[in-house]
Length: 397
Figure 1 (cartoon, helix red, strand yellow):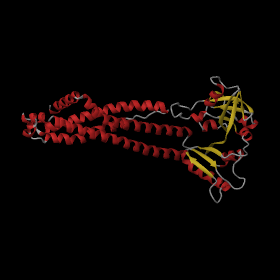
Figure 2 (cartoon, rainbow, N blue to C red; figure 1 turned 180 degrees about the horizontal axis):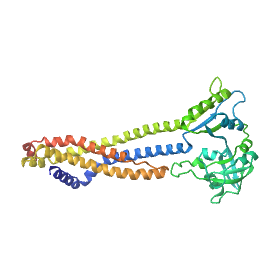
Figure 3 (spheres, rainbow, N blue to C red; figure 1 turned 120 degrees about the vertical axis):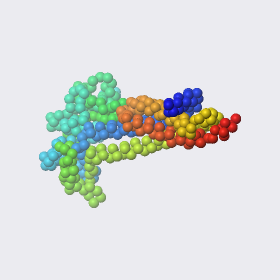
Figure 4 (cartoon, one colour; figure 1 turned 60 degrees about the vertical axis):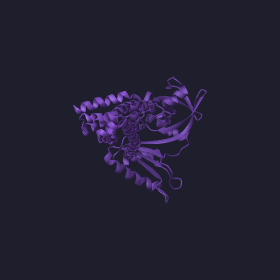
């Protein structure tokens, strides 16, 4: 009964001063909203990065030749493909030659990144065609002048028309478009993966001649399982050191997708914790606001407290009355903050271009912290009210 009566009295006090109550809750609302939104977006971004890395496979290695000795600064296509038979556990090797080119269709001209690739690129990079076909081995052997366009490039050059079967001019040379890639652009203000749609793929043997590249400096390696990645990396690194190492450096770099996944996870966890901590400061500020208003409320209602004590109310009754009021303010602010935070998370994630991850743990932690703030900062005013002597309280005019 004591708790029920305290809740009714506290709610009546809150409702009778709506504007003041809302302004008191505003700090809690902003704090809970900030914690919910920032942590949800942080977790969503982490999940998005993890998904992108997993699509490429955590058993993938990327080697890039950065130096060399004398004129030995690259590998031939035959040398790279030979690794697949000479080193066990390698399932796929995908060498790439890249450069920037001018692409023309009629009067439309675009500067576009170009990649010379092999057929396995489709699966290594998870890049599949939406229309037409992908590059095949016969295209490499015949050095065919064919191209596969990214959706952004196709739109810029052909508008809404399907480019498959049409011709484009790349650096003054005519190429036939045989395929259109699936879009990787998820939209949003950040233009997620927009660059992945702005490109042209051609056979690697054709690219060597077009870009006047005599060798290959970048290649992806896929291993049959994660356990064999260190061994394959060590074997390839040993061979590349023999070919390109100098007194200054190894002459190459290697990127392990598993290491990328672990590093990104660590960074995003630290970032989410930092953002949550910063947003948590708003909750503390909101708690101070609740404490200030409750102290004012105790001062305004001193005579009421005296009358209640005079008719038999005990110290715990007065303590409960004001503590419940403080908790109700913070709980109401917490509920509003959670709802606004969830809505803002989904709205911002749709604009930015990835899905927010609103978990129950984030909601529970945010709301629980708001309740804790209400109890912690409500104790002082409630205790002050409970300690008032009836005769002193009734003496107040």
